[in-house]
Length: 130
Image: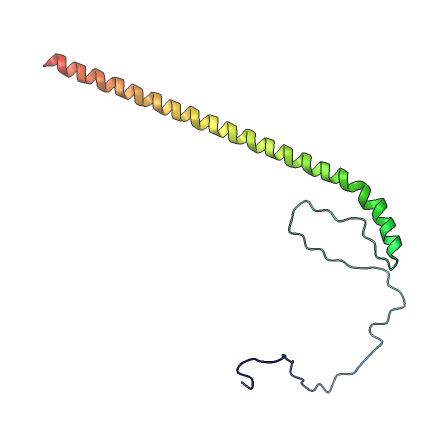
């Protein structure tokens, strides 16, 4: 290793390529008819729409005012309503599950009481026999 401490700026090795030809016209286009955008999303429910590509800041601001600002409050309300409904559903399911568990526990306790009564009767019968 020429630089065992890895000090300094890393530089890629330059390997001669005899087939390489410089071509500055590769990036020259007469017109662009489409733009591809790849959007990665980590949160479900995110919506992307009304995308504008412009070189005029005022045009972009006007477009945003027409398409985004007016809808933002409506979209926020829809999201809040959905979250509220999901929370209510989860709370209802949790309450039903707790009620079921309480009923089962009560039933188990009642069964234990029956066993105790039977044990008491057996003990009384043994006493009587003695």
